[in-house]
Image 1: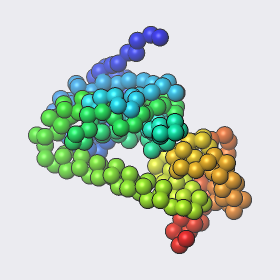
Image 2: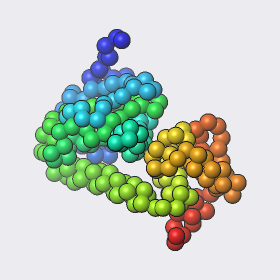
Image 3: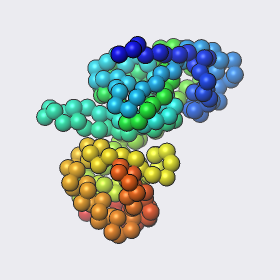
Length: 234
């Protein structure tokens, strides 16, 4: 296999990754230029791993385009998807105190373009601008809130409620009008068997809440009805 080519962002022909995140976009121009010289870009084909569990967590990864799944393999050898990330989202693990390795693997679900910067370099550059650090804390807080919401979702015993909650979340976070996920990835994300997911998707489609428009493509057509299922008492 040919060695991958990693470019500096200064040589990138695409829009600067500094414009993707508000925490970077609002920095003074001189600081943006200073940080951009440390940024690198990379490209991954569908199925390639960005990193594997226990690889050094020494960099921040900004997803420019594409979709990735992050997950772990449980003690029975089954993959458990922890999250699906899209363009504009970030993997911040290198900023977590005591986090020296990635606690999960990340694989490309589509072709993926991303930007990377060393975690220590990022924090050193940001430390001179307290207001920017506030924005960073807010961004990390959102990731923590999403993790808590995922834990709450997995605690729901009713499979229809759990699926409804997942679809509502993906409908907000996905890029474009459709949810693009294979049946197996949905099942792994919410701890259900693929056949259970398929059966409940069929029920939701018959009730007019979603529409399956192709393999791995779901369109939410009635968010209010899905919210009623998710919020109703068990």
